[in-house]
Length: 441
Image (cartoon, rainbow, N blue to C red):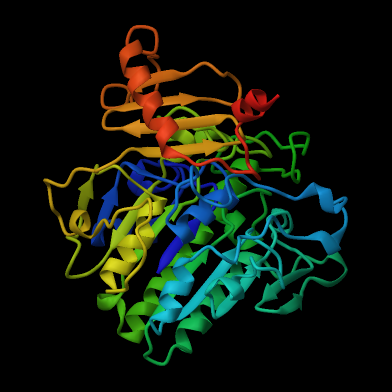
């Protein structure tokens, strides 16, 4: 059971330091399992992070390396017939396919963003017996859409622009229904809730929980997405409602009698958003880290992560082992005794079981937006951002907030890490780095 929040910051839940937002079920999960305090997403944005999770390949080798609307199709933002993002290639072997082949009932519920219905990136074509949710990331910008998808079927909801069916509620119900229908058979589910990705929208009963809780400045919609009269309350209420849904799903595992034999992971696909009414500073969503979504600083990549695996993972434990999304496929396959090809990731089973002498055998590599790159090797991180081609060097053990750039004073370490960067990736025709384009001129 992989529970994936959307744009949830490192500091947005109580067990990772949040003071303003109530997350009792996630906090309880942390007491039942292990917190991974140095776990990284696959990318600082949505689609490539999902690709990395499902394929076990980091963004130096993965097929999808950035959000790609495929604008060459036409006016994708206004033509509803053009929903969906670049499809994941059929040649990619996914977590869904591996577990499906091993006899598991496989389900993906939530936001997909890796290809539309009927393409090679259709979730049903990528190893998931069951899909329900948003096939398209753009449609997911509205929690009261006029349709969702269940496998090959379009499910029409909210006629004439009404706001009756809250998509996150429908997804939680679908997850419970799927679990009810497993009939004792093994299952693998990715529950990819769209919360708390913008827009700020939440049913009134949840909003009322935070009535008058914060000083508010109405958001007028000028920085994207929809306006909201009480944006802080809306953001908090969305996360608390998500926490309620997660609690219901975990209770269902108890009810089914399978909680003790189910590995549960909770995490986020990248760091928190900064537009559309989000208030990073007030909520301290980055948990003291620098940066946010769409950046390769720690705040854009390091995500709150909890693992519960009764009998294997000690309750109320914690690990600072450096890990990332591409480790989950080999971890799950190891746990389930499923064979897989050698990928970028490494099984975390020994770490989860409490081994203290495990050291990561390689560096973590990230790239985004055709220019931003980062590599983490031990205590050191080298990066360059979309805003600047200059490389920056940080010692994360001493400076997790990335405030002291060591690039000038430790050029030897920069050269050492640049060699790792060059060896970490293969070229992509679809997502070339800017330097590749300049070299080819």
